[in-house]
Image (cartoon, rainbow, N blue to C red; front, side, top):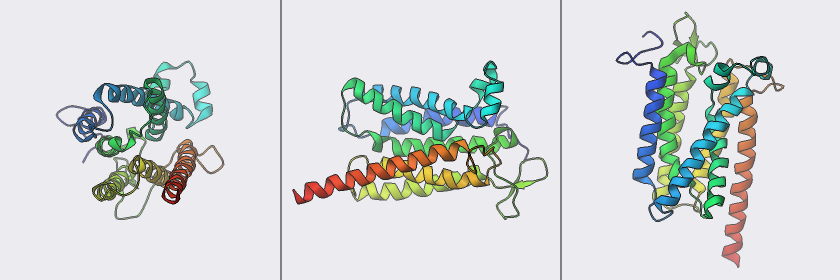
Length: 247
């Protein structure tokens, strides 16, 4: 296989990123709980998520190599070309909460996003993998049987494929929880975000990206913030549930 692997003459990154957005949105419309939030308000939540994700993904990308970003502060191509999933998730979270306050909605809406996010991210990572070295999402050199040569003669960890497998497992486990009606409204989304941030914190140790923050990179720092937030949130919800039971 040659990288990038064009499909009908279309660059894989562009093709699968477009499919990720389109299919993810269709999955959301098909699987969302129609009784949880009416469609007119759900659209505002989607707008908030989209805008927040776009800004968050860019902002965190600029922190990958602060010196390089400062050197290219007036280079529009550099500033708009990169993005990060972790930044998108955190930015999307802020965007959703802002939109909910704007429309006066207090119920959790996160569970409806779990499957669309997992599906969209898995599809997007296929494009990352097929793009090869140009995408900069591969891992460090390895002698593991999973190693992939992206075209320069060096076998590397296909971290994109690791992520696809991880997301598939998490989605299946959360789906089982949903069928058994375990937990509270919003728990599935909280567990999805917590597990993904933990995965990204660990997997980025085998990525050849700059680690300018002691031994960590920008993704790992953001992931730690996400991990701390969701551990606190889940603990808070558990405490509230226990109080309700004993009240």
